[in-house]
Image 1: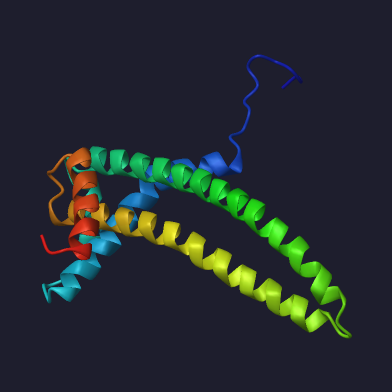
Image 2: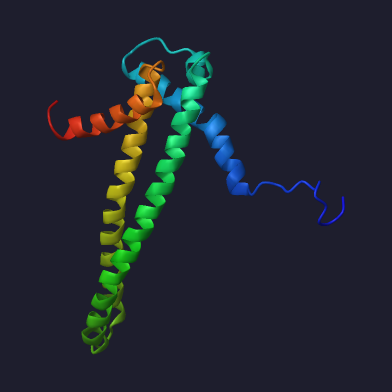
Length: 172
């Protein structure tokens, strides 16, 4: 194989390989695991074949569409968290500059500065965890709705995921 040949095969990047594996196999196995867990909670008989509910006839295409929605949500979540972290960095930077002066005047400023860093890290972690929580609960909700009724369309299942979140916050 010559360098630069138009017939040379270029390998897929590793992230793309993992993405395809998730879309065509991973999501379906996760949906099967959620199906088994929900059956066990309802005290129904659980069979090994319940793990492969997404691979049954007519269900696989819908699960692939839900996997694509999940990948899109991961991308959206990543962009939102990137922007939130940038915004928090803009807010925290002046605070760090303002606190450096009083702390540097202390005899031993390291413990105070370390406590400040730990506090800021905890606050930033808590704020970002709210976004993680929302997206993961949404994904689990529409996957659970899919395992309960795999004949529904992916868009309706996605809407049910939102509906389940809003019903938790108020009585429906």
